Amino acid sequence: MSIQPLPIFERDADPSFRSLETDAEAYAKLKSPTSIVVRGGRMKWIAEYPYEGGAKPGCGTRMIAHTHRGTELVEMLTTVCSNSGCSKSVSRQEVLEYIENSGGRDYPFHQEGRILRVATTEDIAQWNSTQSEAAALGPVAKELLRNSGLPMKFVAVEPIFGREVMTIYYLSEERIDFRDLLKILAARFSARIELRQVGARDEARLVADYEKCGQHCCCKNFLKVLKPISMKSAKLQKATLDPMKISGRCGRLMCCLRYEDETYETLSKRMPKVKARVETPDGPGIVLEARILVQLVLIRLESNGHEFAYPIEDVKVIPRLDETGKNPPAPPQNNSKL
Image (cartoon, rainbow, N blue to C red; front, side, top):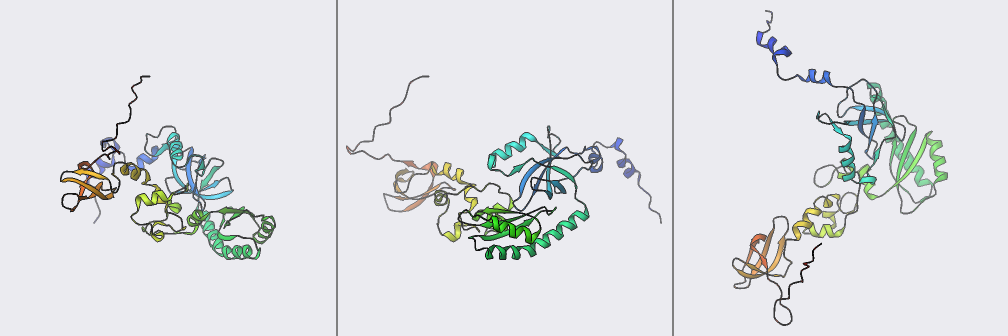
């Protein structure tokens, strides 16, 4: 029995009877991008390169690019155009604002290069082969660094797609003259060697996987600029200062302590200090503890010694008396006009 198409389906297939375009029709109208933002390398640097091909790639597409290091396999993030109203791309102004808000000059953003082509199956196979070789090169490079006698700790090795350059990341507490070591490494691997010194946080970015929260380490996943974290932030946000609970895979204070630091700082200014005398709906009392996020204050009442938690809106700090037993004078107001 043959299948007969229903007239209603034939009507829906006719663009003249539809108000919305299908995905195929919308894709056919798109133009090839002239500029593409990509991500590449073990350190997940970001770059914007011009593109002159006729393909219309989407986010996540693997591409071959000539970068500041050589020929590399990169991942497409988005296209860039002067008017991003099509919702398929971002404007250059949005890219620059994002970079400024994410570290400014310290953000690893590059523009010296160009997109060569969309990666083919042969390119992907070659890249997988290069990655397999990199896993075998790691122990060899580690042994060469150990035999050099220099105070260096091997972290990771990264050959690029074109194999023109091989980067070896290492940890060290001091500056090292490794010119002789470079000659040994270049002769052993038949490539230009770049020795790059990294810190503990960058080591976690290269070799760590998951954090105690169950997510990928921020430094490995999306965080590009690793700013220092102060103990003040840890004391403000954490009920405990146990190093095992506030330290990340790198052994330093967790980067996520910085995300809510401004919020904690703002909320903490509204809270009365511990041992301050305050007025509550049930009478005066002494502050025992303050919970910043929930904005609650634990107070021991002076009348009966009972302890209750009050919202910050129901608590008013009682000013301290001066040596004469009177309230301290109010600070002078500046009534001058500009």
